[in-house]
Image (cartoon, rainbow, N blue to C red; front, side):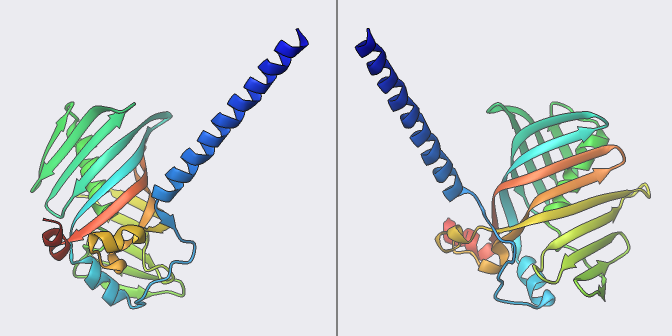
Length: 238
């Protein structure tokens, strides 16, 4: 009887070690695929005008996201795949691995499945487009502060960190006169993929955490993977 208990204990210990080993390997594998976060990003160029010029060569962005949509005290969560360009957006939202919804926009025409009201679809499209394509601001003035640059035009105020040359916050005045705000955090870079995709390392930097707020609505976005493409890199991948 004692011998049987001893064998059982050994099997339990062996199984426990096996599962622990698998868990550690899984965590290490996930970490190797995750974006590289940088508390103090190193950038080869330090001029705001150069960074904006580089970013304005981006023609499209592809990203995998985790999204939390908050309204009042209710929260809906899911994963999403985003394809975005200045003229078009394709957002597919998944829940438990299954496609739960899709929002498409092409030159101002928005379609969604299931059907969303005009406010929600506009909030998602305008919020995500301005969050990711933050550099597409024109006819602006620049105010230089100690730690930031503030770019303003007739409808947007964009604050850019001097240290990271990435956005910190945006305020957007909507057509109805109300404001949408976007805040950023978590500077990251997909440099491990840069060489493979032929990307300019300067456009590989992005903010991995975004919060879009309007009235009692809020969308929190965590970027799991990100790739920006220029016309040149798109041709290289064809």
